[in-house]
Image 1: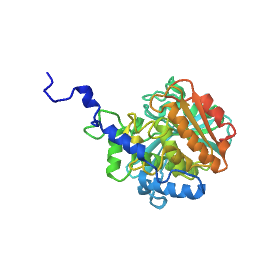
Image 2: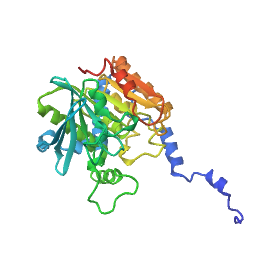
Image 3: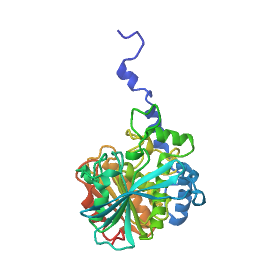
Image 4: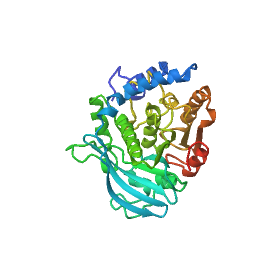
Length: 357
């Protein structure tokens, strides 16, 4: 029996008990300080880029003069029906080695255009070349067109597949008690304690990957793109904003307004940047990339990056590209299913934008 004077559960739920009620009010009142509102695009981009470097902790990553030697070493070389694949490991920073595949399509001639390929919350970079995680000689059927490198090779583009921190071969193996939620949570929380974010660390690894491409001597650095889906797409978006050597971005199932996605729907901790919302929204983050070309890929039934929010975000991004005189370099494609990549739609939209062969 409910004690006299005590409201029933439905009445209790009408009160502001859930933390989301307070947060929703705060989001409703936000007017992000560096959201694009017109004017000089280049000056706005400089201000927001500097803020993003600070908020993400990217400013705390090793600068060029302090970066250790890459010391790349080859693990194996293998032929493939689409070309050749080399597995390498290079050093990003002390205590952080990066496994990667460098893939060259059959018949390609240097200097190669290259797509840096980033998996999201999957079992790792092995999906990008469609091989088993525990035996890279065994082909694997990869769902959702996530064999990114093979898609690039089919179009004559070389690929660098980076194993992102906390995924695949870089999953945590030493910490005695690990998060029951997912493999990225602990690293994301530790990074915050250090004044970094896991997101910034992953963007830094992309930058080191481009250092590796530059050191090879057979890559055209004016034709380097970054692509990924879900968590990989998120890193691609921030890499676009923070790394000047990125010339093209293809971000799948990662682009949306904050309030339509990560502010109101459960996501992994590696998607969050402390203090971002009062400063800018995701369309502004990617708008820093203008006028360089971008393809946004979305799924019609994506439950965590809802299409209505994607379209709202894309309208705002399109306004930035129009102001930069590059409206044709900003494209959105929508696949018929959910949270996955759509290879043919994405590369079709990239035609004429990505400086491939």
